Amino acid sequence: MSIGQKQSIQPLFQPFTLNQLTLANRIVMAPMTRSKSPDGIPGADVAAYYRRRAENGVGLIMTEGAIIDHPAATGDPNIPHMYGEDALNGWAHVVKEVHAAGGKIISQLWHVGITRRTRSEPNLEAASISPSGIDLMGEKAGEPMTESEIEGVIKAYADGAANAKRIGFDGIELHGGHGYLIDQFFWEKTNQRTDRYGGNLVKRTRFAVEIIEACRQAVGPDFPIILRISQWKIGSYGAKLAKSPEELAQFLAPLVEAGVDIFDCSSRHFWEPEFPGSELNLAGWTKKLTGKPAITVGSVGLESEPFDQKDEHEMIDELVERLDRKEFDLAAIGRAMLADPAWAAKIREGRDNELIPYTADRLKDLM
Image (cartoon, rainbow, N blue to C red; front, side, top):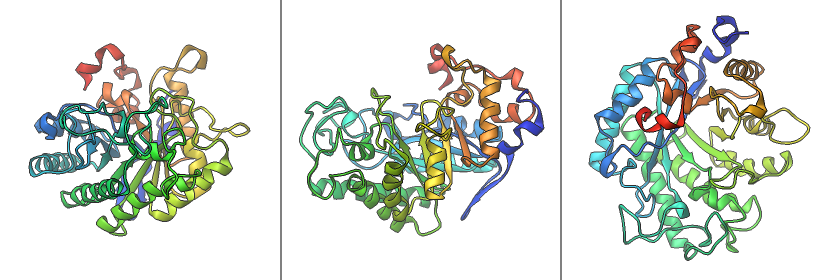
């Protein structure tokens, strides 16, 4: 069955509403780091980049990670900031352009933690931070964060959330996956603390819980807060925070109570089951266990590896079928939409034979 047949793709183009957020369809542009904002300031080219996707019918745009106001939040001077007058003015222009094209846009707030090389730009004097001074490989890489440092980072997230709301974003996403700072607190390999921010899986959610609560206090009850989670980490694709549905339920419960509205569930391949005995992926299990809306993401629209024996049409058909049976609520498209800004429009109009394929060697041109 072709993905160009309108009946088959209808679930992708149903509206979605949560509190004050109403989306025209279920297609999300996934957050993708670009390093195109010199000195942390997004310019007119950044606004044009996002507007092109909005003009082509993307329901919701997630920005690339925008760093919070902390000296060790990034090791790249071209990552955009979510603080400072110039950066915020730049983002306000991005929001204006996306809204003018009929789109909705959410800011992803980011701190990379120990994945930043110590004493790298833009703040050479700043040491990288992490829960226990341990990097993703399990090696000693500094000193554990003090509680005072933790409090400062939590405030920086809340300030970033307040900034995003003030300049017109439609919500925020907290990047809590892939082995970045929030996820470093979640993961037992990088969080070996013995205070209230460490311990078992539930206790290791405290840092995230306090960030969510602080952001909720900053933005009010109806402003959407999305949390990105993942089992896998950079360089540790087989990592598991939760090894069973029961552990996943325990992990998610305090995050829901803290105020998460939507979970953005990052998997390597959306079609792969998360646990034995069920076809549900991470997003499917998260929605089932929490009752909260869930976003699935993971190689949507890309050619799969040979052993998967799926072509692009089969993958999109499977995505639509899972949406139709309400396994998850939204589908995030990353590299496929990077390659083709008109991805959503072409799928909607049955022009899938015109899709521009993503290839890694074209990455710099596509960004």
